[in-house]
Image (cartoon, rainbow, N blue to C red; front, side):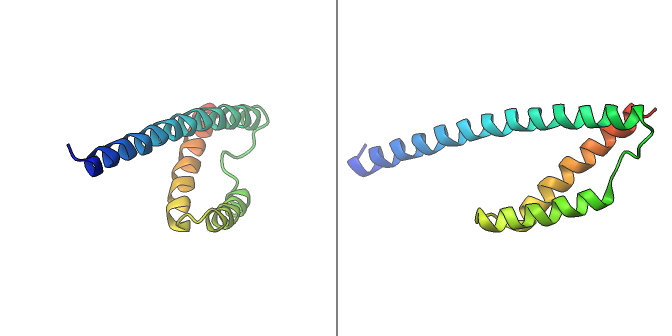
Length: 98
């Protein structure tokens, strides 16, 4: 292996290790977020509140759009991600209300 190939392999390994750490952070952060939304869902179910809150969801989308721009992340990607999360949260809230 040439020196260039060896350095490239080492850089690739470092990048992948970083990605693996970030994936772990994402998973644990997502788990914590769902713990919080499950508490919200139980509270809503106990008080006969609707499973979804379109006004809050709209505010969250606008907030996420701004955060994505500040972080130099494609806002459409951030929106797709939050849309998926919100749909899962609503689905869980609806299950709690049955």
